[in-house]
Image 1 (cartoon, rainbow, N blue to C red):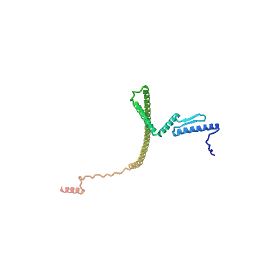
Image 2 (cartoon, rainbow, N blue to C red; image 1 turned 180 degrees about the vertical axis):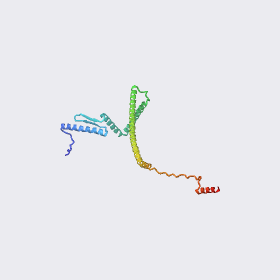
Image 3 (cartoon, rainbow, N blue to C red; image 1 turned 180 degrees about the horizontal axis):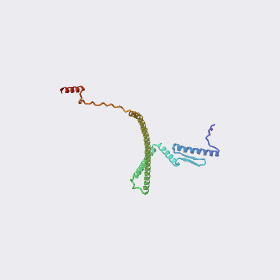
Image 4 (cartoon, rainbow, N blue to C red; image 1 turned 30 degrees about the vertical axis):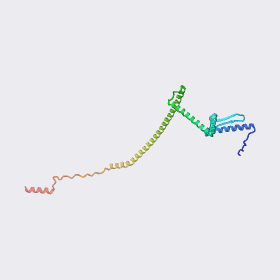
Length: 231
């Protein structure tokens, strides 16, 4: 069963009024703090109890919140009147020019220029600023170099891993090639061994003999008979 609506009116009982004040005050301060943190808002809360006791909350400081509030109220009031609006913007322009001149002078002093009007304390403060700036530059430089070294190591590790994978693939290819050569040339070697067991027969034709002093038998007999007759 849900809670019923509470009538918003003054609590007559002093004790109940004080208890309710404490609870609602704590809840309101908690909500103000959450609003400032979650929404990055500049929150200022001021509470006076019935007895005149002050309770406040401010994200930065109550003085800054009040000054900012008064400035905004003044600007809003001035913007309603054209004459006041012109004076307001003229004052803003003068203030911005002064700030610009101060920044330019500070920049020249950081570069070592226009130091004649500065005393020892001013020079010491300038030296401190330069040292702090140099320290910040060195820290940033070291950070960048460290990040680059880490990135180089990371890339080197990746290259080493890729090189290992390439070596593995090359070794697998060499192994496959060796097995393939073994299968192909293994049968050829067996065939050559069989040929060595049964060497081929080599046929060679003899050269023809010359016809020197070659006479038929009958001619020889005829010659001998004629010789004998003449004798």
